[in-house]
Length: 139
Ligand code: 5GP
Ligand code: ZN
Image 1 (cartoon, rainbow, N blue to C red):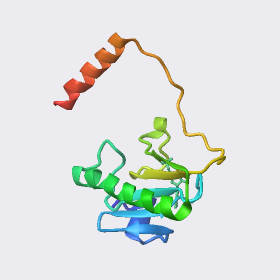
Image 2 (cartoon, rainbow, N blue to C red):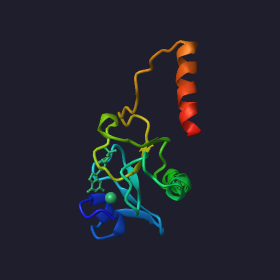
Image 3 (spheres, rainbow, N blue to C red):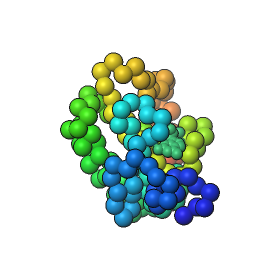
Image 4 (spheres, rainbow, N blue to C red):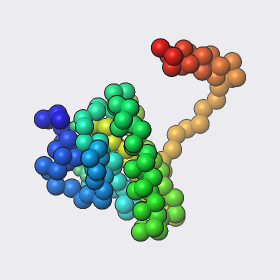
């Protein structure tokens, strides 16, 4: 636990939150500034800054919890779709530096835009990038 981290305090239960799910590894809460009704955050109880330092046990359990929450939201809120978003570092929009996964139910005409500008790449550029990543994957 990081003493200065608000999500550590929320995850541990020392700051109250609208909790929708809790187990030994995670607390799932409603976001204070929701993009849409039901916008939730999956918080590991252990402190990780983001994807770059999350441990394997937490990472491998994360989507089991996310899928459980997603299905419960679909059943209870009758949403039409859902975005799963996870920001890492400031450049990517991270504002709270304790790993969290956004689960954002989507509704027809909710007016939200969660998007990127599609770019373009030549096949040889894709191959060169893939080759670099593959080398690092094996390190
Ligand atoms: P990020 O931009 O880091 O991916 O997302 C941080 C999210 O945390 C934002 O959607 C913001 O509304 C939410 N948030 C920040 N502080 C609190 C808080 O104290 N309680 C809750 N429930 N959500 C928070
Ligand atoms: Zn923390």
